[in-house]
Image (cartoon, rainbow, N blue to C red; front, side, top):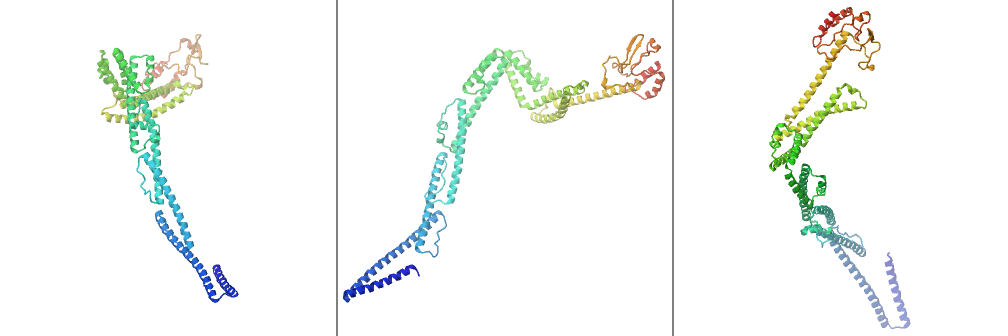
Length: 566
């Protein structure tokens, strides 16, 4: 049994006891029955009215609870729809009070969600308006009065983040372009003229509208200023080039050149004007010094002829080069010709430099190859021999590669120009081939000469014998050899190895042996390094010499004369 039911039973019991007690009191007092009935009715009315009042109050409380529950549930359903959340579900088995409390609590939570979302939306809208004002863009499409969903808020956040990054990029671009515009205006010595230029150069960078149109106009302004600056630089460069040429042709003193040094670097308006004045002054001097200027230009033309490998025929084609009538017209012709040569050289600089490089490498290769064939190269004291040999080997490998590269460039040049590429009036590739052929012919000739010399030496050694030589003990020509000095009639006779060979004779390989003087018959015989043999010994050598033939065909006849003489 509930406690409330126990209390109700006790209240009923107490009421019964109270009524019995009243009856007892009325009995003791002696109140008549009519008054007792009346008083009992009063007690009943009082108790009944009190209970009815209490019941009415509780009934009112019940109605209020039901009404609140209904109102809360209705508002919850509306908020759930607006917030796009699942509908509120009532718990089963709950009393009215519990249901009213749960719905009221849930409603307060939903209202807090609504408030937060609306505050977040207002913040995003405020930021969106600020960015739109700066970048002149269209605001994000969203209903500002309704509660946004979580997806809409996320999309709004992402949109504003992208817009913020775009704004930062445009601002950085604006600052960079503004700096370049300021530099260009300073170089051009120009002040902002239009309202847009004034807005751009305004100190408050945040006040500039970063719209696409403004950024495009900003870039257009920069490109226009850069074009003006480039035009000024081109004009200054043209002036400077002409001034440098005229300085060299007119031999202008260095002091006068230094006075214009400031204007030879910068390209502002005042520099352009100063350079223009200098060009006019030099033009006047040029007209006054026509002959020297033309001769200076001719020297420059000759230099470009050499660089461009012009043949004599092509050089003679410029007839004005040899004219002695130093007029302004002749000067114009020379200036036009030097400009043509400059352009021709610049257009084919890589090819001409490649040809020059090949010629330099070929010359160096020939020098190193000549040194390689020099017997004195072995007197090496500083390691130069190895360096030169390595350099020669590298050149021998690199020259064909360079020739291959030049051939490809020449093919392209000939296709573009429709004529053969010539160096000094001859096709370059033919010239290269001739150089290699001549080089190989010289090498072959040297090889044959060495073979001939070796063959001659072999034949001499077989005819007269071989003198033992000690490579480590070479003696200077003319130095007496110990054991080889003999006296003839009191006179010393010196015999050296191979002293009977004569390099001056052509077609013969043996020198005839002179007869010894009469004084030698006393036992003092002139001895040669070949140890002159007796007739018997010579007879034995006839068989060995019979099969030897020299290229000149004179060895056998010479030997026969020698044998007959002995």
